Length: 111
Length: 115
Image 1 (cartoon, chains in turn red, brown):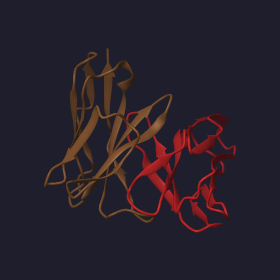
Image 2 (cartoon, one colour):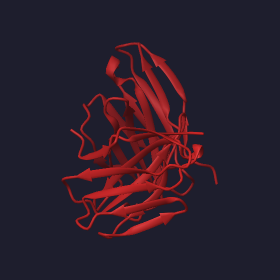
Image 3 (cartoon, each protein chain N blue to C red):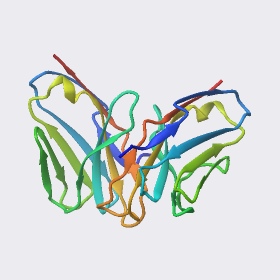
């Protein structure tokens, strides 16, 4: 059973469209991280959100942390083929480096 | 600065054998964590070592073990391999003790196939 549920599992869109990926949990985490993983590589950290209600922007990517610190979303505006990859959310508890990952959302942006 | 290096990149073993995977963290990093990634279960935490001591452990059987050396390099060992152990094994290193603001850097992984 995944503590962090990601939806959808797969998204296929055309270049220029927008997309949103959701990450939900019944547990409270001290922070949530979003990663992108490409084939043959390890996950690469995109952002960490710490404060409930926090919104962070990274170029065309917008990340939001829910007020109760149990859920998060990633929104991509005007997606490009370079955004193709596996997007993973991961929860961090207060101490240590243990990451609890969601199941991932595979995004395919077609030119 | 070199990134996290995992060796070997690919490995093929048969059931019942044992395997050792290696991870060299970023220079200066003292924490090394190991994860297993499979299509069915996703990324699951195996264990974390910090300054040669196991600090956290996931829910994996005792066949999975690890250690960390004084230079922070880490190895993980899987004994009596099963078909279900086929996976991408990822190592992540970080500088600090942990917590919300700590950044972990992942290696490219070792893909293990058990036949």
